Length: 258
Length: 293
Image (cartoon, rainbow over all chains, first blue to last red):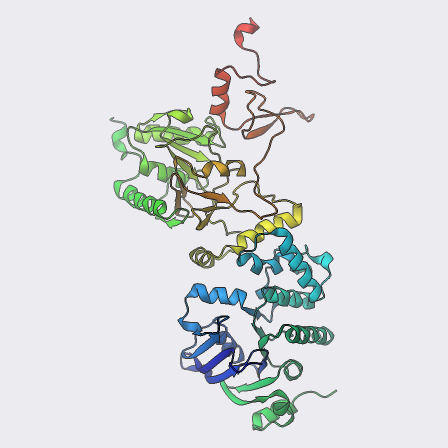
């Protein structure tokens, strides 16, 4: 890990009229680090994620990202063209519902290849080769390359979505409840896969989840949110094993033990 | 002129023509960009060329000579009725000869004869947005045009190759105009795409229902999209036209009976007739009358 953070977030707030979406959130994210944002439904996790990933304009605060040239740029002072280019090359966004992140009516290969074509790849054979390679890496049979995602199971769709996002070699991936809606054995495989990919590629990731087990497995650090505020922030093991805030203690003790 | 007095020249009122001309000028200034305009109701149903008719009505003058084709033919319903319409409301000369016309309104073909400087080709366009079937949201497609995000267009071509082993899009084949905007050349066969490149004639596109006008000025680069390993290619026909023997032209298939009999003839009727007048004959051309007597 280097000394300079990849993402600098300071004082980000989002208000929906008089209601608070998230308030005064500040943190730094370092390269190769996975940060989990946990909290119950309606605590502002997804609002925060959207504010960070330029999908939603925050009311106040700044989000700075270190570009590949080493300079920090404020995301909300970039032109829309630059922002969208960043989103489809240097970033990834994994939606909870794969149908939001995939093109359901085009084949798996084209889904993976779309980003390559968007950045100017014009050689069919090479695009297909890369797509095949990525399908293998996310454990989808290469004979399914010409099938549409609607013929895929939920777990396969989610893996396809991950492949589609990682194909351009992003440095930062946002994940919104990546395991939501999957059964536990599929969840376990997906988590294993994501953990492997994050380690191999040295990705930074921000994972929003209400599932503390996901946070435990994937993340290095975590933030606990409640009513739009970050109430606790620390290394994952510390927060889960020694929660300080009463709400975090409640959250940790509500995990079902089998 | 008494009959004509009930109509304004070329049907549309002067303010409407002014509005459409402004849209046309803007379209010419930004090749391939779809300019919105306040499309009027025309005395014909949508899908019959309301956009093309409005463009033609706005640029036509009393000295112009008009030709109207429908799928290359001068004598089909759509072509005949639009031609009659302009004879009535503008009292202009009409022709079927490509080289004599100053304005050619077309539905889904570009004439075989090369167009010349000074001629205007007006296309009737049903769906002007090339990205429409991939991205249904208009707000999003406009943004994609504005930011030049055309990766999606290649996703469509990728799908073609993945499914059929080649680019199977045969008409409305997307092109990039002047190195900037991706444009739908209206449902012309891709056979005609190369004719748009560096054309001497002005090309105007009118979509009445979708309320868009776009243009390709003369001498403009028009490049069909493709992959490096699957380059763009036009349709090829194995046999010449059965009536005039022309090769390297776009042919229509005509079914002759229910026993599999068929013939291929020029889609451009004027081109075919012209060749026959000059003594060319295909294998199925009926012998001339003198010979029969």
